[in-house]
Every structure is written in C-alpha cells, then in structure tokens.
Length: 219
Image (tube, rainbow, N blue to C red; front, side, top):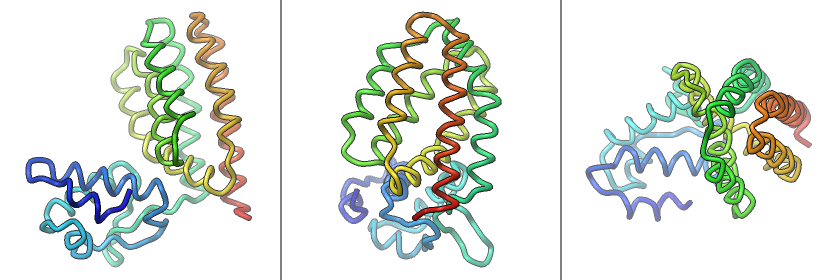
C-alpha cells in the first residue's frame, strides 16, 4: 500500500490506528525494508499530520514486534534474525498445539477458518497472504478457554507474520503451508484434537526449518 495514498484516508478520530495499520502493511510488503529508520518528522509530513499520532503508532508497532526502538537510532523496522525466529517458534511449539487441541475440543468457527484459508489462497501479495495465514492460526487457538494462553500467542502474531513474509519473499513456499493448513483443518472438522495438535506442531517445526534456512542462506 502506498503510504502517500494512505494519508488521504486519515481522519482525526482514528489517526493513530490508521497510521499503525499503514505502517504495518508497508513493513509486511517490504515497502519499508528491514532496518530502515522510521523518522517521526518524515512520516508526519508524508501522512500530513502531527508527530503525536505517528509517535503513538510507532509505539504500537514496537509492542507488536515489528519495530525496534533505540535511544541512539530511534525507531527502525525490525530485522528478522536467527535469534528472533528461534525465540518465536520455540514459544509457539510449546503453546500452540495445546491451545489448538483445547479449541478443537471446545469447538470453533470452522467455516471462518476455511474463509481465512480461501483469502490466503486468493491473496495478491505476501502481506495479505501472511495476515490471512495469521488469522487462520488465531482461529485455531482462540477458543482454548485460557485467556492468558491466547494473549501470549496473540503477542507473537505480528512477529510470525514478519518472519513468514521474509521467508516467502526470498523463497516462496506457500504451497507447502496451504497443504498443511488443509490437513489441520480437516482434523479439526473431524473433532480429532490429538491429530490437529500433532499436525500443528509438525507444521510449525517445518516452517521453522525453512525460515531459519533462509536467514542463514538467503541466496
């Protein structure tokens, strides 16, 4: 999404949210590259607004893990490195299969999950596909009955999306993920919580291997 075009949509009541969403999409499409400085005055000028909503939007993205803040460098687009990816996938493998098993047992909106997969398949760019992919995973764990568990997994959503886009941009592997997602959803439809959890765990581990491989050898 072009940042200049997005600025025309911004209105006072929701400036911070719209700026945050525009920056999020720009980061996930690569329009704002990893390590790129995010200067408040430049962004405020581009959006045609004051620095305050820009500053608040950057804080939101820092909390989401898409932007880093340094006392000396200021705000920059987060760089996906091996440590970050390992940490994200480590937590997901520990928590997500459990949350998915419980959600399947308790029930969830299967058709909405299918809709997320359909959106991912029809996506026209990697950011859109990654966000649909994120929505699918969230639906699979969202009704686990443990708000703390859901909050912890939600806290990893944006970082997972950033890693995913980084991986797909360098070496597209959506066909692999799409097949695995379909298998997971089929197990969930059948009410097989154990199989769904096992498939989710294997899915996360396989993608971790691909992602780390891309980080180590981006060629």
